[in-house]
Picture 1 (tube, rainbow, N blue to C red):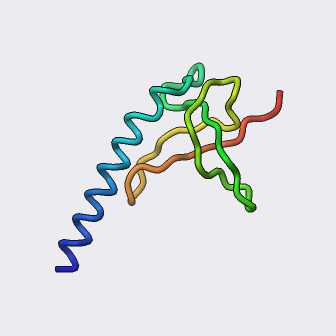
Picture 2: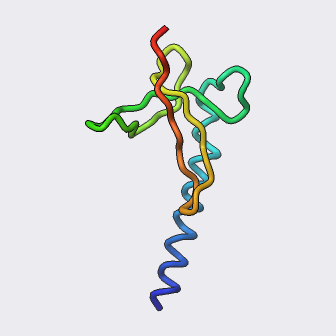
Length: 84
């Protein structure tokens, strides 16, 4: 029974992650020269880790993000943009 519940939870998490990955980048400006990176505005926690990222245009972005496949599903990898 525990195996079935874990399998269903993993499948649901992957489905939700795939939907987010498919939908979010469409509303963001893509990074020139990269097919997988996009601009995002991210809040940063006390340790400097980006959290609560929202795809946005280049002018309002704080980070450059891309989706990565992880053992737990789709993950979001973001780096802070340098001040120009």
